[in-house]
Amino acid sequence: MRVSKLILIVTLIIGLNKKINSQTYPNQNISLVSFIDPHNNIGVGVDGRKYSGCWGWYQSSKNKEYAISGASNGIFFIDISSPITPSVSAFISGKAGCTWREIKTYQNYVYVASDDATPNNFLIADMQYLPDSVHIVHYGTEYFERGHTLWIDKDKLYVGSTTYTTGFSSMNVYSLATPTAPVLLRQLNQDYPFINHVHDMYARNDTVFASCGNQGLYIFKLLSNNTFTLLGSYSGYPNAGYNHSSFLTANGKNLVFCDEVPTGLPFHVVDVQNLTNIQSQSVNKAYQNTTPHNPYLIGNDYALISCYQDGLLIYNISNPATPTLTGFFDTHPQGGGNVGNYFGADYRGNWGAYPWLPSGLIIANDMQNGVFILKALAAFSNTTAVTLPNNTLSIKQQSNNNQFYFYPNPATNRIAIQFSNSELNQVSISTLLGKEILYTEFKNNISQYLDVSSLTTGNYFLTVKNKNGSLTKKLCIQN
Image 1: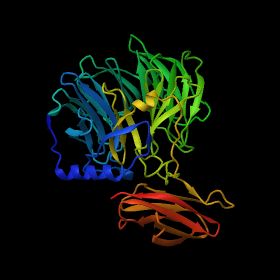
Image 2: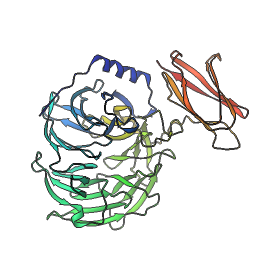
Image 3: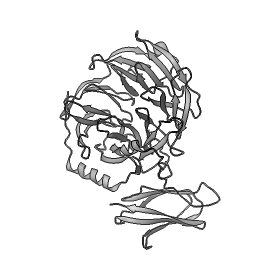
Image 4: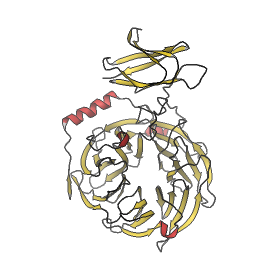
């Protein structure tokens, strides 16, 4: 089956440029090269989720680079060889409203699994014909119907939480000796039935670091006879939650992993040189309520952490006991630590990233906002800690819980405000010369929008005032 190249219509380009120009993404030492939001807004998932997992692919025969973006309605193949002007080369449609799509590549093939509700399918496609088209090799349930995550180690494909039309396996491993026809080698539950499920796994040289949710981290070895043996485990550690995903340093000494549930847990760096005695090196978080989702490591020194509403963070972990935050890019400025509030939607924002393209470009998928192409040379060369932004406004009162939040900033048509307070509160917007151009009053709990569409491009002051005092914050309007 041939999937033809998409033709991007002019209105999409105009809309893209408008979105880029009207939004500012808090960042330091990570710069925005370009941004693309090719979703047609049909088949959007719950909570406005348009995108999920992403991956990258280098086409050496044509010296081209691609971002492969999982979307709620399929998979986009985005040519980023001219990174300032990314373009969609092909699109494979899939189940609409899908929250999960995970992607990995082997040779010129892409493998895509989804753990969304039945009915579902496993996809294999041939990318050698890009940028003109991709060819579907398999799309069905012959191998399995649903898989939560994928990892490829040499010529082996690992699938976490594998669901068939008639059963379930905690983790499967397949041979890709023939990439178009995977061969099942083993199910983990054949050897270790006590593992309920494997959410994600990182494998290197047949050693598998399996994130097993609330059961913790388990390390298995796939032996030459295609059976698994247990090498070690790590559970019950401080701040333990739902062990979600991990990544190993190049030298194999340290592992970085994220616990996703409940929200606000730190990411961990552990020493795995002795798998029978794994040792904690450090626990780390950016903001108090940051929820790390997925880690990606470069060499021995750099960890890139995708953190839902707080975006992509880069840490220098050359000293694993004291990781240093050297750069950040907030793909989701409408919520998170930068505005001081997650607005009851903790699992929005940055799903994942891909930092290993030859050009050094980084791909980052934000569930609601789109596909970001980033550059982070400054973060990799930086050795001093950076400070994350925090736009929280608080009026000093006897209770420390009274805080005023607003976002986005810059804004175009409206801003969201939230305030929990029993007083009569006056909210105003004025010019830099002090002329008041908007005024309203609120009492008690506030969670609503202010229309600022009539304001012209420029800087303003937003002030909240009550009998206990006032606070003023600069508001930027871009339209």
